[in-house]
Image (cartoon, rainbow over all chains, first blue to last red; front, side):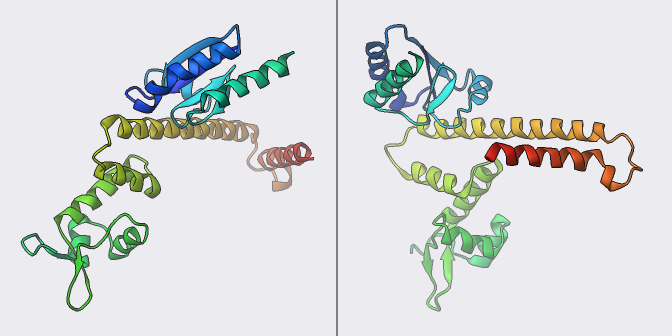
Length: 86
Length: 147
């Protein structure tokens, strides 16, 4: 499962929460591919995925969070997708 | 109100900043601008800071920010705890939104190209117009999808 966190470089809110979210994601799902994507450096890619606000989280190509979720919310979203797959 | 500063009536502020009196009143209604004070007769009075604020609003509008977003920027501007990253984040979000709109407009333009190309004979009666027919087909498709 691929999780992409789009962030604004220099955003204090993002930097503080990214590590917690990553840890929650890796704990919830074994085969997680975690990417932190700068919306400035990959603007076209962000637009292509429908990212309009920052931070945003895309899971397997689908825009799921348009603001920073709590680690619990992210974990629940990932587990829901795991159940959907099986 | 400090009388040392340049005192401006609404008309003077309007002509200085090249916006109408109605626009200034609208900005006030939307919480973007407040008079610095009132004259004894009750007329709104402004100062140089008001003019700077109007210029800020106009520049932000030129960059695509809505009045609601400009209000947020003005709040950020006045907050000591704000850092440049907070403002930059909003600028990046605005850029994302503009690029997204450009993509949508390009898709519309492409769809129009196709319709224009389909209408090869412009002398045909309207009931045989390929553009009208294509738009009707699109409508039917939408109706089917809604069911």
